[in-house]
Image (cartoon, rainbow, N blue to C red; front, side, top):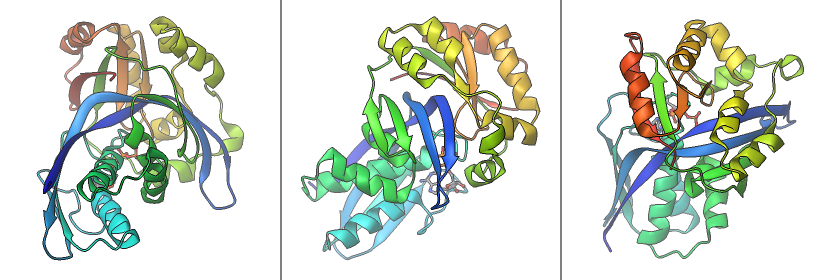
Length: 284
Ligand code: ATP
């Protein structure tokens, strides 16, 4: 096999709670992650000489060692002293710096791809350990589906898969830095936290109305202060038909959930003409 191609999915957070700041500077989180059908396509090719090349069709995505896919390739090539090079071609559909873990998805694709291409036969848990070194959301991107993530995001517990629930994403035309949002979060004064245990029960019961009601992300209060109009987007989504709506990750993407994709499409038609990107997708 000389190349490997994979579709790698974006995620949304159904809940995101920050428990405390750890001594190593990271935040201890508890979050329920859900993959969605919106995906990047990553193609990995073997090169005869030791080097890593990254290509991406979206302007602004770094192509050097700053790229998460590059970092993942370097980590595995160095760890296993792989005597070959890698060319990574990313076709990007997941908006960048949007709270949808696009960079993490690409890194996950490279970790999975190198494991296949070089026939490394590493277990999912070993791949997750590599993922954790690249970024907090990479472990989830490796397994996908519906999962509870703890630690910095690497301690994963699979939950029953939610599928075919419609998701409407609204991505405003600016980026939000995850680092900045976490640095502005004061864990001691968080006003509203998710009831994670209750949400897990609702997921087990496939109770979409209960899930919609339980959506909660403690980072909203920080990002909404930076971009107050996000609160209006969230409200409008609900007024125009979403069962529930929330900011994903550190934002700025706001999403609404619906019984199915068709309902998401109907709401999309009714929305104000935001200068935002609107994407209709579904849980997968
Ligand atoms: P998260 O929710 O994990 O914080 P995000 O969706 O908010 O992620 P990303 O799309 O991963 O954010 O991008 C964050 C930053 O990483 C961007 O500023 C971008 O320049 C950089 N980056 C590095 N590699 C990639 C990649 N493969 N795809 C997208 N962005 C990348």
